[in-house]
Length: 637
Image (cartoon, rainbow, N blue to C red; front, top):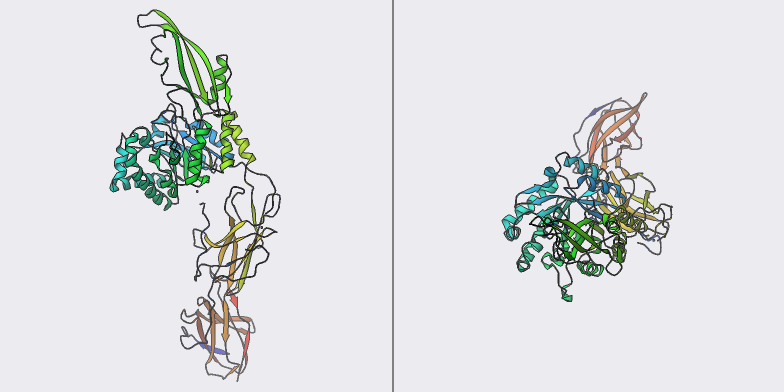
């Protein structure tokens, strides 16, 4: 038999052990030739019309380190097949505090083409305060429930915030560093506290309250504010949307450009630009947002901002102007029914019925991209003296219908912009919105199906391991030349890290080779593009078995120390020495290897002659598989 004395850790001169530099790229051969509103109607009256992700973009592969794997890219290629396409998410808009139920209902009804919405509920009233208009307007509704209802449909929430201060007050806040930072902090706190996905700035006071003479001084502080707010929001993984009136290319000299909003200057800092391409005609009869005017602003926007970030505004309302009066109007309407009076605003959904009720038919102007109709209406009553009077008003109405919406939807494909943003989502006819949905379905991106060849892998420490994923359309057609990102994370990691980028080959496969130093999870993803939806594979795992080397003499003498050295790579873990007896293997002793040299020395004192059979085992851990060395015999004499 034997006796044993435990030695804590062997720190002496051990066998030199050459470790691999782990989780680093392996250069491999290419596998194919090609490798590698006012409440009445914001957007209608100048002080109240509103305008209205990363996902993660692929980052550079991390450098080689003991914890982050960095493999080498392989290769890949394009199949065309329509498959079953979902609608492209090209429609969004605002849900005002005074029409929450209808706005939320429409959003959910059209969630197929809606990825995000902007509740129009908040107003900045000072550098430190924000007014919540939802609560006072909806005493029977709970805001949290409405927000959760939208979230449950997978819809992102970017609430709009308006300027609730007086003339030039907000400019004053932004021009001082201390108050500007307060505004940034106040808005960021609103977003983070409510776990919104971001914010939509609808700060129209600069354009419609402060006056154009202030724009030159406001412009630089606005841009600085946007850059600082962007940094604050992005640090919290939140989005920044900006809604502004139209701007035009300054080279054209076109009038009516609200240059205070500095599109080129804010471009690097924003995630959405929503253009208020409506209210072209306010004081006089005319189209709400004619096509050419809208397109001119759009062209300028996409020349300074990525097109995918740009959204064109569409009005859910129409305007109805008095152009002529015959007779004398009753005193109760005399101030309203006269040429030059403020136009009446109506829901665009009622445009056709309104025309029909007066015996006329709307005429669609393809050049302007809007419908209009003319009619007469008689008003009877009494004058100030109480005498009966009557007047007949000639009226002209303009609004956008289904045809108008589709004309603007064409901008989505023509310029590959983000989509259309509507004031408000509770307005416009179902027919018009259905038209957008039908259009969105025709341009829907392909669904990409990502699968792993193997989801459970095991490898030896320091050995090369290949990871393979396949990408296809829903009809199983392989996708060639598709950009793929392999990602990894450890057990306690909260986020995924990019590992390597590559492209798919003709059979839709993408693969990487890497050396793995400890257990990890992996997946393969693709980023959303115009043609295809984003995709991600199931999560795979790689388990690693450590390298174990045992040194022992061929023979030893009874009563004298028998030294058995176990070395482990990587240099962590508990090793156990076992001896085989008549009843099988039993433990003699165990200990943790030295972090200095990865060794542990067992000392055994044999008590009888003959062969002794030993083996060394390694306990499993979160990072590594358990393992055992080959049995070995020592002759005791």
